[in-house]
Length: 322
Ligand code: CP
Ligand code: NVA
Image 1 (cartoon, helix red, strand yellow):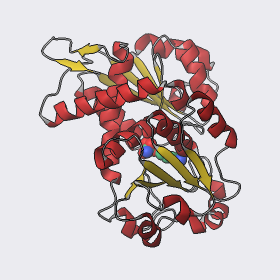
Image 2: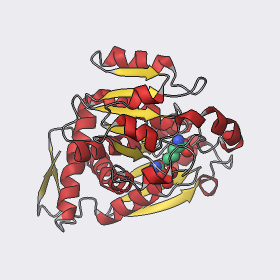
Image 3: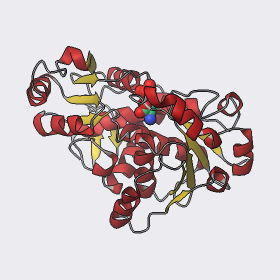
Image 4: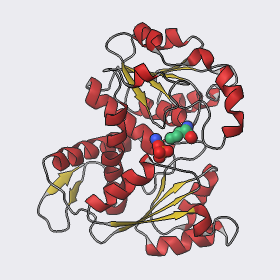
């Protein structure tokens, strides 16, 4: 694992190892152990879109691990045509131990990974949100127990988050159900690609949100209009009206179901206030976990270890296993 450019670029063994490392790092942090695993290392983040969770969770993760971080807007980095993407990637790679990018086009991230001399992480593109999906499965395991055989029901837009979640679920033996209106479904090619790599993957697209969530362990939604789709928001609000996660849908899901959302949430559109604030909602645990998973991603990529090997703090005080 050299980069984290897409969820599909990970093997299931990498996904499982990242979750195990995040669990250990979180538990040590909770016990007051703030190990300087990345002392002297530099994270550079370049974003084309706004961010609260991704930007701050990576900055906090890097600082808590003893490293430092730099943030640039895409325009400040010169990605608005000031110089070529390849040149920016090569220059930033020379100053950084890892680069996190948030972009519109996925191929900007792929190009960075080709030219930068350090690992490159996708902090969201129009196609993918792998750090989010890793966090979501990590949070689901904390809330629901061992993942194998559980079900995640996604209700809403077949977008970047849904795509990464479908793959992450397949990696970890979680059944993935999606209910999306016509015209906003996941590309059926995605399920075929996942199934070709993981024949046991349990994936289904259903029309009726109530049928999708019945008995699910997690009900998940995301915004109806993603960043870059603001001009479509009224059309989408109409198309998605019957796909709101509200008290009636959570009743169909059942008492066992947790509610998850990558945030930011548009309360009153894809989810109601009462669901966000209900005891079934684990959205803020999920948001905090972005930082614990970011740490695992940073340690894994910067230290360059393979799953199953040991990660050692620079002062050899303690050993963290993957
Ligand atoms: N979930 C998420 O990626 O949030 P931000 O857009 O605030 O980073
Ligand atoms: N699908 C959303 C996710 C935000 C974290 C977007 O791309 O805007």
